[in-house]
Image (cartoon, rainbow, N blue to C red; front, side, top):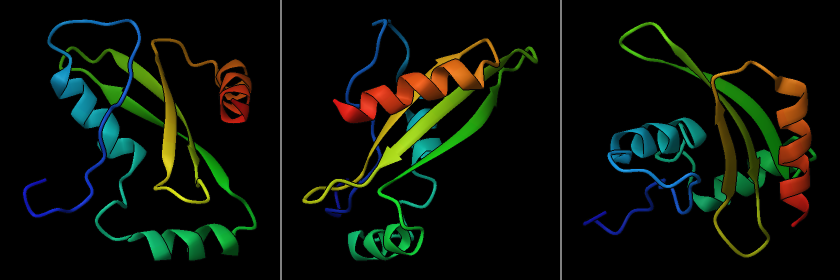
Length: 108
């Protein structure tokens, strides 16, 4: 942002589409709800306390119509960078398969 603070953002998405800026902003905030509270040094402490360099979580976006979109996320702490979050949005609640996909993405 203008103050030089780190802000969560979507770097890549598929499929490409028009008018997704609002969705990208929502997803970025769900992936990093603690972005304002956790400077990089605190993230290292958090991950070291949990004995892990990654965490998996889910969220649900509810549209005005009541339709639900499920978010499956894996946040990874990289040794020399800010954390990254891989996120899959789906209309289907299939945690098991999406969790396996996210684990494979983390290995890349």
